[in-house]
Length: 600
Image (cartoon, rainbow, N blue to C red; front, side, top):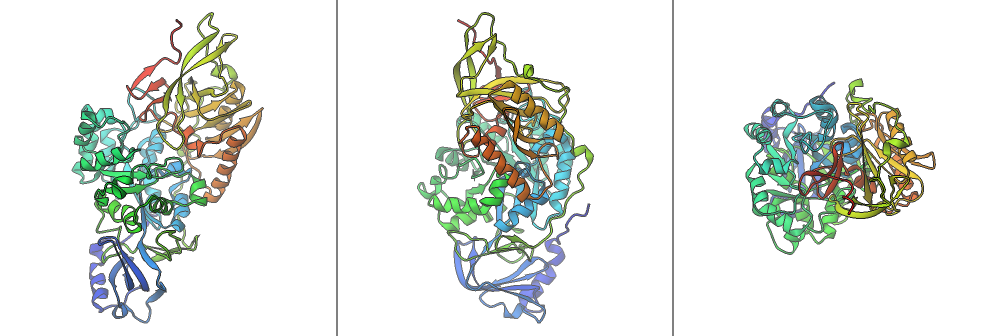
């Protein structure tokens, strides 16, 4: 493996100074553009940018003194010159792609910096998996900064993961070159209650002078929230309303507002800036997360910025939220996030700040994409066999593994049901009266069955429960080894035999997503690396993902990006109700609850 090396500022400072002063010629000069300065929130016409050694040396109305006979000239022709876009919080694995293929997908959309938390692979492969993601990230022609995962498991005692992350793992990772901080601290009750392990991880990060990521998924903004902030997390992306955004920035956190494939939390929070007039420099835009279909068809951070503008945000403020605000938060204001001397030369040329067409993308001083077409190679890591073949069921599953037995003599039961909420990560804790046939509890049309199948240690364990909101009809099942965050296998279906077929199919192919109806496989997305990612091109994965979406719709599901909802049903740190390998979890109280209420 050969990591991409990029010179540090001290290594190239003499050259930058010489070019800025006119004593040496720049490698590249972008001429005649409108300089979008995110430090001052200005758009300044008729400016040029001189680039040397992959960094910006000079910005001004006239860069002729930096230009020599071998200098490459790029004519901006009056277009806006904006900084490369930064995604402040994301998980590459959720794109179903490896870091290389993810970079290849987002570079044409103008994303030149990503702050990634690979806690998905940490749950499956532990610290070795994190290192693999970190190493491939450093090979890319854009900036992929890795946050060391903090919570595997995300809620100790409520789930069993393939591996656990320790404070010692965190301390070791803080010495790696591409580690920028600690990944989202999802165990917010642990922090609020001063759990020694969580505080040790935070302390190791702060000793290294790096940023602690937050994840406070509770509506309680009282003492528990204050205790969480006092514990050290510096940002949070779990807000869903204006009050959440305001509470976070008032307490000194950065409010990260997300627009992913399924989470639409920008519109409901950005009013803190557009209507309440709060200082926008403490707000950051992010995705958290986009799957391959969104990346290929709709965009990445350019999509988020456009959306923020459509929600009434000033375009220059929206750009600050996707560039300099993010860089400043992670201590990288001198490296990325603006078009100013000394920074990495990450520049986008666009003809319109509202629609934001991404016409030319420059990263580290080189043209990496033009008009949607990538112009550089994104090198691949040699993923070992240990990263593949990670689905271990213990035995071939049958319909009986998905049976839910009713209390003796019952004709109907009252069940606790996970209620899916469209376009939001939280679920609802619902109740449903369900029929009993031949001693087994059945779904009722609106409510279908969900199962979590253990896949790390081949225990053969299956946890069965109920879920509503997908709208599935007929004899069908959908299974996925993407099951945040423990990444066992989630199977949702209306028929136990179809559920068994789907689960066994994923064991056969080494992980992914599959949909079955009446004994026939309608769609399959193979994700052979840790059961989470494919190293195939994003366009290929996106095409299979589109087939998956079409198959879900043909089975009666019309929710927006329902796959993302499916993949989060085991995330036992977001309220209200989730499923784990240990049972049904009420995340409001962080307690395991019974599936069925006692008979009266």
